[in-house]
Image 1 (cartoon, protein in one colour):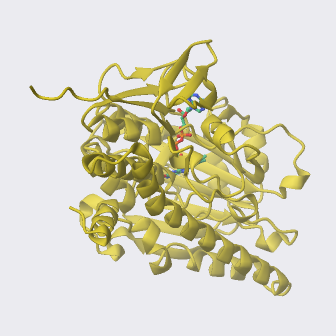
Image 2: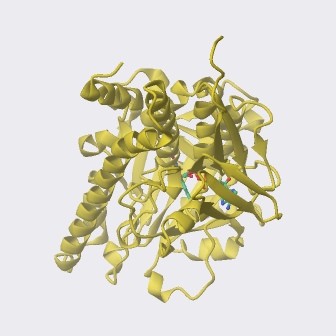
Length: 446
Ligand SMILES: Cc1cc2nc3c(=O)[nH]c(=O)nc-3n(C[C@H](O)[C@H](O)[C@H](O)COP(=O)(O)OP(=O)(O)OC[C@H]3O[C@@H](n4cnc5c(N)ncnc54)[C@H](O)[C@@H]3O)c2cc1C
């Protein structure tokens, strides 16, 4: 008689952002698992305008079978300008990267990414209105999860995909806390038609840099998909202050902001920028404050918990944005924080976690072995990211001491010149499938 299958591995994923949805797709494809995704929201609704999808993210989306559903604006030409004068500081083209066209970076509506992932998540595994409030490592095995509505669940493996304010992280790394790091971001999507009459605003993806932040403009739609009148345009403004001077209550998710508040930070900017901001209808801006906390040495806990996405790398506060008492230096870094790749990191985590578990189980090893493999691949990657941020911080401090005689334009030239490039290929050019292949080769596996 054939032996009975062991009971399925109970997997609880917390959070339905890119990381949680990616994990739901990847883990559901494993044999003999029972996957549930718990999301606090009443409906899965993305806020926050657009998102960049680059090569690293395309690769992860392909592996998850969701790449074809994601369409947006191909960022053929990218400009950096002095936001005060409009002077062009740097321009580069996507084709400079010699990638196949399908891997060119795109700016897409966040809702588009979410619906492409959702379409691949098996039906009926998502439970909404389930805000996790605590979790406990059971001596008898498994993890006991308690939700705000008074219900509970037990899982053999918990995947913390619950973002920067992760409750899973809070419980598995007691004492870990995040705080406001000084960066505020305001984002909006408006009809492209409402902005297209302003010279130089809608023709390319562009950053207009100022002394304490920037304004970012980009289209977000694939022009072949819908009627021209339906195309939307993204504006994302960023302002950096010394966090110790902030007196407001801060929120990491999008809260409403008035036009007056947003525009007040960009009054010195080129008239084209101010005109563009003035086109935004009142009531549409959403404000996000950036938070970060101490870095984690490991992205797993209790031999039963994996942290993925923003929950796993709460970027160290004082390195993820640069503010300085010298106004010429308070230029926010667009390639710090999550390197404009937070969604890619979350999806890479999700896919690698599934491969690691699958590999361990197919070799008759326990879940804890799978988690060790996952950690051995992803923790060093995040450590490299932290080291990069440390170097950036050091460069900023050095610049601060030598900047007394440098103009804003000079500082800007140096800053913009350091964006992207070969030194960040390990981020933007990361091919997660290749990473897994290398792991298998290193252990002599298949
Ligand atoms: C202003 C801004 C601009 C950005 N731009 C880019 C970009 O251009 N490209 C890019 O790749 N990334 C970008 N990012 C980063 C990217 O948005 C994140 O890295 C990505 O969303 C992380 O995905 P995640 O699934 O880990 O977390 P999240 O997207 O934060 O999702 C977490 C989910 O968990 C749910 N949740 C939280 N707590 C609980 C709980 N206790 N119980 C149940 N559910 C819970 C939340 O409701 C949410 O649905 C940007 C971020 C910001 C703030």
